[in-house]
Image 1 (cartoon, rainbow, N blue to C red):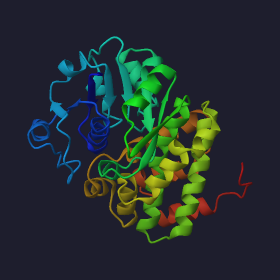
Image 2: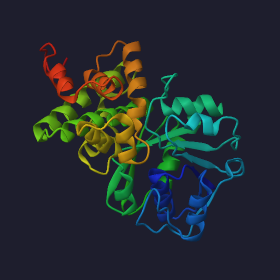
Image 3: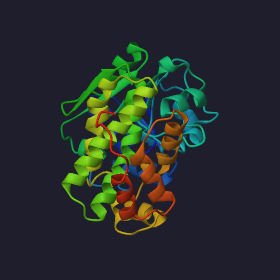
Image 4: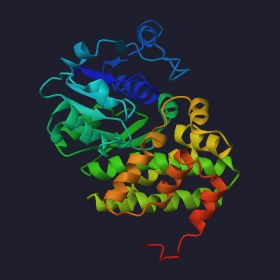
Length: 331
């Protein structure tokens, strides 16, 4: 039996713990909030982040991170991407533990993908890190609705082992060796989902949404290929699949945040109205920096940064995008 730790008591961390429990594996969630830890242990709920769902008895919780990680053979990291390094710095893990990233973002100041940040922070080889990404909205997963995901890693032994851990009758994992493509698909789709939300917020319809999703996929693919990803990954669950779910669903915090901004709220008001972490708002600047470093054109990402941080009006943002020079669709 694996000793499984889930670091982070947010919606996705809690939902993934439920997947593991439903697959027959006991696990312990770490949370910094003592009230949340107590609620998970006593009431078997996490009403703050995943309301309306009862958690299996095989899920427990603790606020003792060093004690939890010292013996865990599998460490699932489900923290906000910009806070993970601070939480995990100086933490000791078991020598052969498999580290699983559920995070979707690019770290500010370093422009590192989440697997790279974990390798750097925990001082471990890349072979020990596995990433999980796909169209996985936490509430639908917790409800047991059919879904699939991608488990990616450079070492097939670790990748296959994690995939086996999270197989249930409603959750189907696929394996992939393309860590770069899987992570970039998950990180950048959050930024594109903000653009889709902004469009919805100002009243644009399905033509606009389809345009944003399709051209968003084009710029994600450009960046991913430049950084060494397999272009086929972008047509799969971690690319197009996750992009469609996040851009189209009202359950997506990034889409919801964008919609609030489209209706005229400022960034702080929109974050407060959305509730929880809005990864796209945090990572859009680091994604754009990464694109600039590698000379990759990402107009939608640049537009989101301008709207969120520079106060660009959404209608002007649209006009700017539509007035760009004409070019071949495949360019």
